[in-house]
Amino acid sequence: MTLEMWLVLGILATAVFLFITEWLRVDVVAVGVVLALMLTGVLTTGEALAGFSSTAVLTIAALFVVGGAVLHTGLAGAIGRRILTVAGNSEWRLVLVIMGAVALLSGFMSDTGTVAVLLPAIISLSINTKISPAKLLIPLAFGSLLGGAMTLIGTPPNIIVSDVLRDAGYEPFFFFSYTPMGLILAAIGIAFMLFVGRRLLPDRTVIVEKQIVATPKELLDTYRLPENLLRLRVRRGSELIGRTVIESALRDQFDVTVLKIMRPPSLWELAESGSTDADPKDTPIIPDEDVTIQRNDVLVVQGEDDAVNQAAIRWHLAVQPAKPKDSKALLSREVGVAELLLPPRSSLLGKTLADVRFGTTYRLTVLAISRPGVGDKLDLKTTQLRFGDTLVVQGRWRDISHLRDFRRDFVVMGEPESEIDRPPRSKARWAAAIMVGMLVLMVGEFVPLVTAALVAALLVVLTGCLTMDRAYDAIDWKSIVLISGMLPMSTALQKVGLVDVIANGFVETLGERGPLAVMIGLFLLTSLFTQVLSNTATTVVIAPIALVAAETLGIQPQGFLMAVAIAASMAFASPVASPTNTLVMGAGNYRFSDYVKVGVPLILLMLVAVALLLPLIFPF
Image (cartoon, rainbow, N blue to C red; front, side):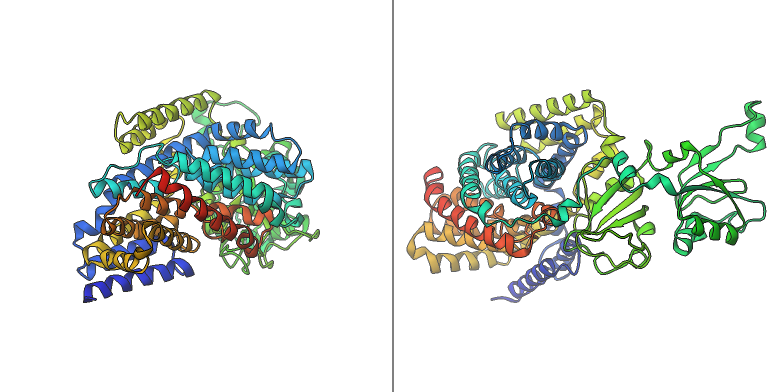
C-alpha cells in the first residue's frame, strides 16, 4: 500500500463516516472530498472538478427539471389518481395496484416525487377503506424503488454504471436494458409483499388519524383560523413606525401574528390618481422581513383578544374589528396555509420554534401545532417538538414549496400550493408530449441521452410548464453536488490503484468459486452500503471495482455492473436508506424494525433472483 492509497482510503473512510452520522450535509461532505483530493495532490484540479461537467450529472439535472414539470402541471397526480381508482377496497388489491402504479411511474420520473404525489391519495384511500396506512405505505415506497430499476433513467445509479461502461470502451446500457430484469424483480417484489410482506407490516393508525390531507380551505376550517382575526391601526407617535414586523416582536412577546399590512394611499398618490373616492382602497402588503411599518398602516393580525390588547397598549395601536375580506390574508394567490409533518430524523425534534428561529429561517409563521393523542392547544412558544407533530404554517406559497428542499426536517402534506398556483390543464398536455418525445429520442437513440434530457428540460420551460425559477427549484441540488463530488473519488480510487487492489481481493477470495460468486459478493456489498449511504455514492465507489473484477476474470462486465445498479436500488432495510422510505415513515407510524423485518427478506429474495436470472440475460 502506497502513501497515496492510504490518503485516498482515509478520505473515503471519513466521507463514509460523515454520510452515516450525518454530522454534515451530504453535499458538504462531497465538496470536502473534492477539496481533499486536490489539496493532497492525489488529483489535479481538472480531475477533481471533472464531476461537475459529467454527462451523467447534466442528464440527471435535466431529468429533475422534466420530472418537476410532470409534477407541477398535475400530470403525475392525474395519472396516479386515475390508476388508483381501480384499486377497490380490498387490502390485497390495494397493495397490488399501488405497487404496480408507483413502479410504472418511477421508471420514468423521480422515485421521491412519485411517492410525494401519491402519498396524500393513499392516506385518503386508507381512511375511506378503514385499512391502516401502515399496510400500504411501505409497499408504496418499495414499489418506487423497484420501478427505478426498470429503465435507464429510473434512478441515478443506472446512468452512472452505463457511463462507467462507455468510458471503459464497452457498449453502454440502452434505455430498456434494465427492463427484463427490472420487470422480473418488480413482479417478485410485488408478489412478496402480497403474500408475505404485508403480513409482517404493523397495523398502526394513531398518527395517521390526525393526518388527513386537507386542502388549504379545509385547514382554515379545521383549525378555525379566521376566528381570531383583528385589526391594529398604527397611530401617530407609535414606536412601531419605521420598524419591521420582526423588530416589533409581536409574535415573540405577545403571541400575535401579523398576516398582512393594509397600507392606505398617501395624499400624493391620491392627488396623482385624481381619485374622489370617499373610501380609497388600501394596498395589501405581505409582511416580509424587509417591510417597514408606517403611520396609519393597518395590521391584520391573529391572536387572542387579551394578547392583541396588550400589544396595542405597548405599541400605541388602535384595535379594530376584522372585516370579512381579512380572511383573504390567510389564503390568496400569493399566500396560503399548509401542514408540515415532522419525520423521525428532523433536526427540529426536542427544540421549540423559538430555538430554531422558525419564522426567520423559513420565512413562514406557525399558526398551530397538532400532536397525535393530544386534544389541548399546544403553546407555540414553549412546546418542544416531537416526531409526529404537525405544524400548520402560513406564508408565501413559494416559501411553503421551498420546504420540500428540507426533506429530513419536514414532510409537506399533499400539494397545498396546487390549489392556487396550478398551471392550466393545457400545460399538463404539453408536459406529457415533451416527456413522450424525450423517451422516443432516448429509446430510439437518435441523440445521446444527455442531449434528449437537456432538450426536454428546455422545452418544458419554453412552453410554460415550469418557470425558470421553478426549474431551478425542481433540481435536487444536494444530489447533484453529491454526485459531482463523489465521481472524482472514483477517479482517485482508480488512479492510485485501489480499485485494482480491491477487485483483485474480490477475485482471489471468491473467484475460485466462479464469476457468479463474485457477482453475489458485489451485490451484497452494494446492498449493504446502500442501507446507510446514498445509493449514488455507493454506486460511484463500487461500479469501477465491479468493472475491474470482470476484466480480471476475463468476462464481459455488463452482468457485474447491472448487479451493482440493481443492488443500489434495494434500499429496503432502513428508513434512511432512501428518501422514499423516510417520506412514508411518519405517515405510516413505522419503526426502524418494521423496515428490517420486511426489507431484509426482500433483499435476500432479490439476491436469489439476480443470481439465477441475471447471468441468463447478461452471460459472463
